Length: 385
Image (tube, rainbow, N blue to C red; front, top):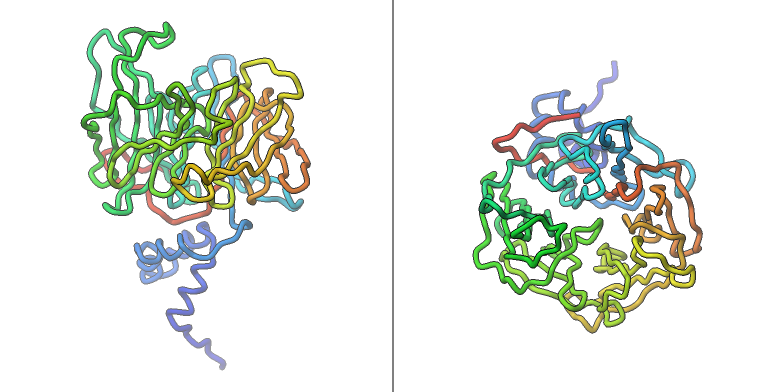
């Protein structure tokens, strides 16, 4: 009788590297040695850094639906479909855990991915999620309060990895007011606080410069790039406010001169062709003529060199609420003003409408690649859906 030869371990590992997370999760049950291998930090890191292509990209799509009482927040897990630029679900939709179900759902943010992890935030809660393993965890709340009679408004949130200290960090910038912010008072002071996954704790930043530009907590006004959080910000002119996650220091960068004035424009930060990219588009809250409905796309060819900004594209598009993501390095994903997901092809100028919608201004998209990265454990429980 013919017997099957045992494969060398390096061959087995090379095969396992090429498998999707769902298969690897199943194979952990084969033997104790496979469980130990797939759970090991070395394997997780090598699987994370394996060579991938755009066909390995997945899409996390969040939207909200108006119900009789409040809103329902839903996540969809999507992948490129049979048609070249179609989107197909890979599993049933799930309800978003912990995020607010009031009208403030238009302020929900998705930040990331970082090593395959994504941060979901509202004005109170922060949820860390691995969409591939379907594990998530509600992070502990900050213990730092404010004086009675004052109010806090979240101005900026960032999530990324500190490569020096080998830890994930969340930074949150708040404005503290002497009265509710909708009465438009002057800012009393800035507050900064950082969550560290290694200690599962928050601490306040010392000596936050009170002259910092004001970050806008809009959809896609923040990105983690080159070891720093970047926020679209404003102080007389438009700027980019940066926070180095390793040194925990703030700095600013200039935007292209034509984008430096507000001029009824909104700005979003994304990455195109691995370059830091600024979208300049019409403010959806203001009426504009069709001739003004253009989007400018600028890329910074040399990071932190202000003179290296170049205008890559000027496109005419349907009236949009905001940019959402760049897929396949050529498809711009937007939400239009009615809450429908649309795409614009930078190569062909084709506009496509997907059969995916939600309540206006609640759509969020993150392009991610699968990873086995575990949710850092702490005082709150890691859960699964």
